[in-house]
Amino acid sequence: MIDTLAARLDEAAVSHTAVAQFGADAGLDVTTAYAVQEALVARRLDRGEALVGLKLGLTSRAKMTQMGVDEVIWGRLTDAMHVPDGGTVDLSGRIHPKVEPEVAFLVEGGEIAAIAPAIELIDSRYVDFRFTLPEVIADNTSASGFVVGPWRPVPDGVDNLGVLLEVDGRVAQVGSTAAILGDPRRALPAAARLAGELRDGWVLLAGAATAAVPLRPGAHVRVTVEQLGTASLRASA
Ligand code: 0L1
Ligand code: MG
Image (cartoon, rainbow, N blue to C red; front, side, top):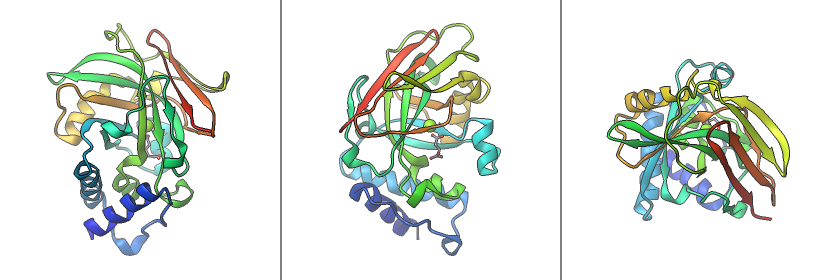
């Protein structure tokens, strides 16, 4: 069952065609869902992609309440998901992408070595972006892409930095890093506990500071995090 579900999600991503939710008959629980995620990402690694980090999801109280859970979830990042800062995201390779403003950490020796403003691109492989908690875990927590702005040393106190998400120069979302686990630095112990490993040089996406917004063709997206700077991307036409 694990391989069958992983194959279905992989096919959806590769063909850019959403799949129906698995439904109660699949009997997916959280433990099995992480096994599906591992099998799903293994297919990407078999095609030559490399693991470059981890992401946390459902890190805000609002998203946890929405999903009826009290624990964050995690997913895997590969090099093929990386979009250079200021680069273009090819929308023909996506289903119904959204962007959300995040904070990224660079991990060295099990510690946070640097911090950067970031954009996560999420793109559920399920129809209408609808899923249960196990279903979204199996789908690698909707991970599809990420942009990391310039790295810098972690300033004192990153627990309440202003965050701005602009689309085509207009403010789309305003928030605070406080929405990320109360303090985004909590992402490190959470990721170590949940994923069991954090390799040197890995990127850790700590979570979203605001709700996600749909990524439309041709849109220019810029995220600004107070004291950290900006990260940006453009969507293909
Ligand atoms: O990164 C995230 O917080 C997304 C987690 C999965 C839920 C979603 O796709 O909105
Ligand atoms: Mg996210």
